[in-house]
Length: 108
Image: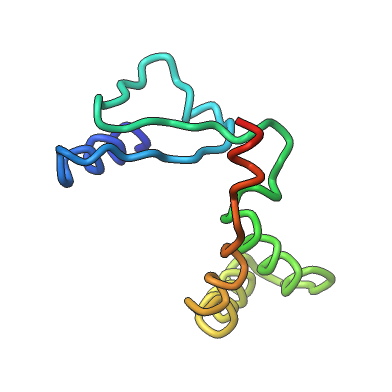
């Protein structure tokens, strides 16, 4: 799926060079992965979830469901859906993920 994503992204505005920041997931570094010439991959330092904006969204979801008991997976799915619809708004995502990354770029 990641290869498909890279291929589709590469096809959008082929003259534009795209840089993607990634965690160190195995599928991001698969040996058979073909990185298109107009895409650059930058990997976050290991064990640094605080630099991955998606993790901040997950932390919010986890905080909302922690210490709750669900009788079925459907109940859990319903609660996550409620959280995503009512709490993880676009404004909330912007608030959680908007930070200056110049300090991280100094690390590179």
